[in-house]
Amino acid sequence: MPHSILGGRARVDPALAGGLMRQRTMHRPEYDDAVPAPRRRARRAAAGLAATALATLCLVPFAPGPAAAACTSTPTQAQPGLNAQPWAQQRWSFDRLAELGATGEGVTVAVVDSGVDVRHPQLRGRVLPGWDAFGATNGQEDCVGHGTAVASIIAGQPVQGRPFRGLAPGVRILPIRASERIDSSSGRGEPADLANGIRQAIARRAQVINLSLVLTEDRPEVRTAIAEAVANNIVVVAAAGNGHNDNGRDPTSYPAAYDGVIGVGALDESGVRFPKSQTGTYVDLTAPGGRVEVAVPGDGYQLMDGTSMATPFVSAAAALVIQKYGPNISARQVATRLMATADPAPGGVQEYGRGIVSPYRAVTGLIADSSAPARLSGIPGIESDPAAEAAAAAAERNRIIALSLAGGVGGLALLVVLVAIVVPRGRQRRWRPGTG
Image (tube, rainbow, N blue to C red; front, side):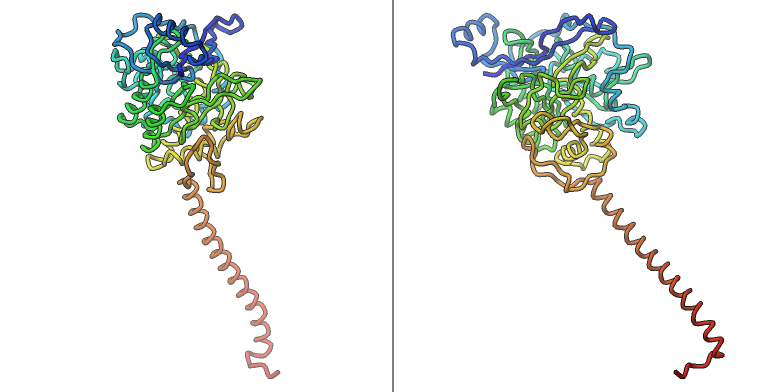
């Protein structure tokens, strides 16, 4: 059965400036069905876990365990932020988006994860009351730090003296606490919790759902919940997973492989696929996922790796598109725009999907129906793009006006020529009709 690994292993990287801790979120899902049955039963009994588990940091669903108290401590080790602007921000020049007013203002993004800590200065005022699968909080607390990291990439507020900020700081974050699995033997969360969390996001009118988690097998309850989100015109974005196998085919990752979901792979600082980022037909886009600076519970930061960190960049870009083109744009149109405006990638479609997400081009670019992407990861039929339709209509009006002006100028020029020829000859004939 699938389970989810929330944060992976963390270790201090002495090469990092400022003593930052590098979160090794390599997302190595451990499969219960790869372990002999007696050992599985013993491990579950010893851990007090339910029959199935989740796999995250490419997060996944899990079933609710007994009601638990709120966090008493935070396992993540916060460190001071970098003094330099993070590489993802340098790549995309967030300031250019801010100058356009592209902040995601008014858009609600559900982060279905480990909760979101509202205490961090760069998240204060941006986190709504949410939902907790474990019944302890309203989602505004994070015992693991993974959900806070994801939320900060989306909606981290600009703060004087701190180079780090989110891609869409105007977004409202809806925290859905559905998984706290660190590995196969600890943490709460089952596929049923993920399904319930997705439905809670639907009920609370999220416009984008971020799923930085991975299931190792198709679960009907999760598939059904995803289908409901897609039917409700919600943009669903999910991590492709961190279990790449250099010697064979990667396993299929869910929810990334479900119809209507945008699957996201990860890039490293050099602009190529992050080594552990999985490949397959379920990869639709890629985004920064190696050594990504994030905010963690309290007032600190970490560097994290993996497709879990790439996914929120695409969710934030989707929010910018929704803000720009209004509430009438459909989830299909958002997916079309994100993929049609992606930057070229240095590899094939199974590694990079349609390319590297480009928030600025997604907001400003004009696309035509002919540029619509093929059906990747089951993104259902592509609808026309409202911006392209408006641009085409304006171009047609301009063409008609130009033709009219050209016709008028041509007629006037012909009249001048005729006058120049006829008048002198008329004067020579003293304005009498010609006789031959």
